[in-house]
Length: 319
Image 1: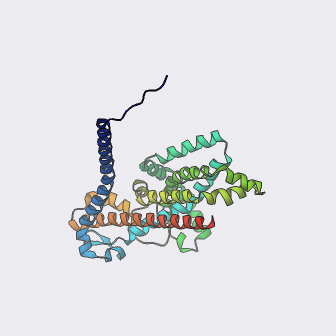
Image 2 (image 1 turned 90 degrees about the horizontal axis):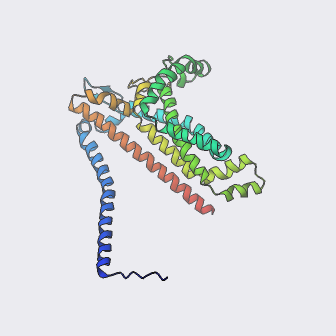
Image 3 (image 1 turned 135 degrees about the horizontal axis):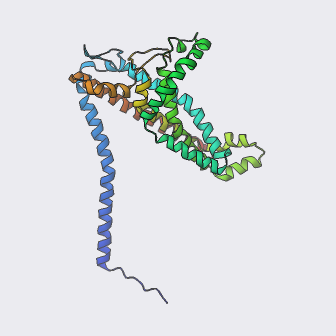
C-alpha cells in the first residue's frame, strides 16, 4: 500500500518558519547570556576595585605589604603563593595522572579499567572542604613528622628545603592540590588515549615496535592535544581552589624561598578576609585580587590555546 504524500501548504510553511525563528532567537538569547554574565563579572570586578587601583596603581602588583590597619595592600605574596602551589601540584599530578591514564587505557582489563575510572570520577566530585579535612588529619601530620624532616636531612643544603617542619606551607598545599587535580588528568587523558584509532596501534606493532614503544611513541603523541587539555583543566582547578588550600597553606602573606614555609594564595585571602573587610580600600583591594586571579586564568587559557594551535600546525605540516 503506497504511503500518502504530505503536501506542504503555505500555512504549514509559515508555521514552520515561525517556529524556526522563535527557536533561533531563544538559543541566541541563551548564548548571549554567557557573554552578558562575563561582561557583568568584569564590570563588577573593575568598578569594585577602583579605590584600590586609584590609591596603589601598578604598585599593587609589586608590593609585598599587606596591612589593613595602615591600608597598605600588595598582591605579590598572594600571586606568588597561588602560582607556586599550582606549579607544585602539576609537577606531582601530571606524571601520576598520565601514568594512570596510560594504564587504564592501554594495559588494564576492560572491566578493571571501567571500575577504576568510575572511582576516579567520583574523586573529582568530592567537595574541596573534604579534601581539606583529610589534609589536616592525614597529610599535615605525615608532612610534619616524616616527609619534611626527610627532605631537610637529604636536601637541606638547598634554599627550597630550609626552615622548621611545620607541616603546613607551600609544599603541603601543592600536595593537596595534586591529589585534587589528578582525577581530571586521569579522566580526560584516558578518553583522549582511547580515542586514538586502532589502526595507529596495529601499524606500530606491525613495524616491530614493542607495546611500550607503541604507547609512548605513537598513542601518546596522537592524543597530546587532549592530554594538554587535561593539564590546563587541572591548572584552572588548582588556581581557583579555596577551602583546601586555606586549611593547609598556613595563611601568612610572606614571600619565602623555602617550600616548607607557610604562605598565602589569592583565593584563600579573599575567603578569609572579605567578611571582615570594613574599609572601602580594604574591600577594593580584595576585589582587585579577584580581578588579578580572573586575568591570570584568562592568560593561562590563552597560552593553552596558543600551544594547541602550534601543535595542530606542526601536526598538519608533518601530514
